[in-house]
Amino acid sequence: MSLDSAILTAAASLRAQGTVLGVTADNIANLNTPGFKRGEATLVSGVSQIPQVFLRRDMSQGAIAPTGNPNDLAINGNGFFEVQLPGGQSAFTRSGAFGLSSGATMVDVTGNPVVGPIQTDPAGGPIMVSSSGQVSQTVNGTSRVLGQLNLATFPNPGGLSPQNGNLFSAAAASGQPSVGTGGQIIQGAIETPNVDLAQELITMITARVVYEASARVITTANNMEKRLLAIV
Image (cartoon, rainbow, N blue to C red; front, side):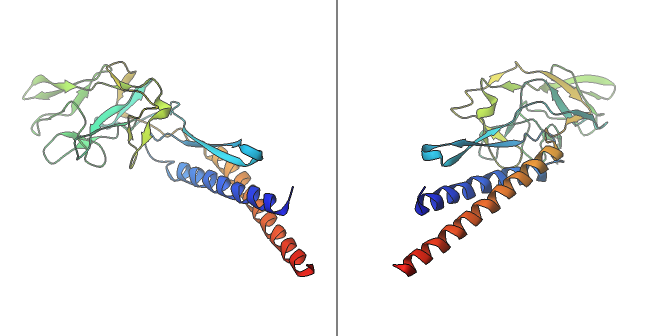
């Protein structure tokens, strides 16, 4: 391998390992984010063995943790909650850490309305959500149905496009959503992130070692080139 080829390969490795480190750091930063789905950066050998990075999102189920908060909802199985963004577009999330807006509508942590819509009565009691997503509330001793939370599923959820926060949007790779075909909704609980801290730390340490080795290759190759040019 020529010096130029060694430098190019090492530089590509630096970029690849930098991406791995960035994805891993994001996973660790979201250890306490309900419903967060960890990112994966897989290295593959491209042309002339130059490493390339394949990014994907691990959509496996996280653990379900009881909270006792009636506004917290977890999904056991497939599917996503749908919320409406300020521009009117739909976004999808596994985070069911919901609350109520000043107008008493159900919203996500950033204030996006949960699609239903679910309008509660401030004078009523806590909402009740069935496993199939029917939302009701007792007002003046009478139980009223407020709406229906329909989970959305995708042919390839790993192909969803990440948006700000813990939201995703439909993409060509994910396919279009199918509404009402998801798993079971559990009230008073949240889905914890599917991040294994120990595994993320191992990935980070490995990537850092390779990153530093690639940097040394570039330094060594540069020094060798300078010496050869000095001889010439």
